[in-house]
Image (tube, rainbow, N blue to C red):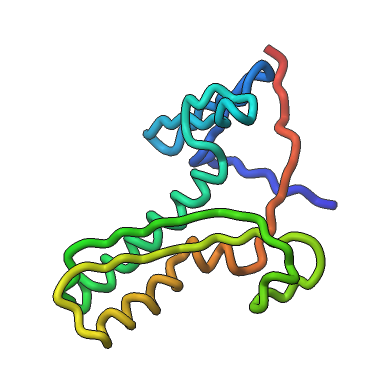
Length: 153
């Protein structure tokens, strides 16, 4: 199985020790922290991995809706995206293709304020499901994992 080597600098780097769940994240010029809650054995120093996943989807949804509203000159004033992650039995999901086991579910609630007509509101709700992160999460994802070349010190 051939592995493709990237010679460009990674955009996101995550560093952590084996002694705790706490991770230091560098995303471009930004520094973030991730951790698990105390109830899961972490120190609660930052959001957990699923919080970051939901954040990514929520931010992308809000940005996409806002951009569309600006381009169409719609009277949108504020956007609030609330998100929840859960695991449900596949048999409890009528719209899911998977029939056995568990399915990850993300619920997204979108609150749009402004003097929007029903048609404008519907268009914004429609565009919300078209943000790039939403499309990524609902399409086939190919994640390639490889060992880094460790250079002698």
